[in-house]
Length: 138
Image (cartoon, rainbow, N blue to C red; front, side):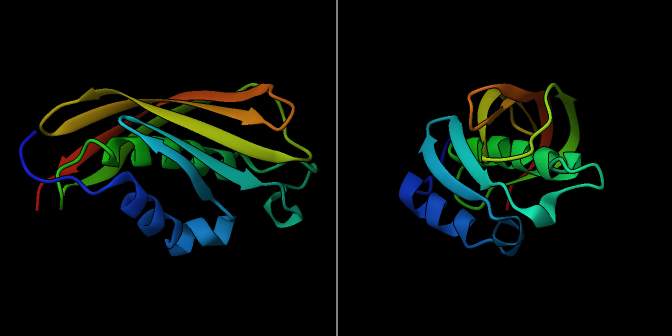
């Protein structure tokens, strides 16, 4: 890709300032080329009625990890907007924190695809998925 890219440090600061990320307690803890790690602490206000972290919160962190990974490859001003996501839930979360790892699988001119895994604090894989994005060039 041509053009300048945001530094990983600047990207991490910008993303961590997002109102939605702050609402759910997300923190981007690691950023590399085409990969990102995002953590979300367990909080009671993220629980569904059966006492486990809501699937929507887990989906959000999975999507966030891939989006941040994708932005490490984006030219300055390029935006990534989720157009599809599929997440398989494998284990419930009732304590600790979640860590999502996102990896870019394909980065084309207008579409990108990423792989995501979400782990509980005991290391158990609790979700696995694929996210698709449309790329907008400003």
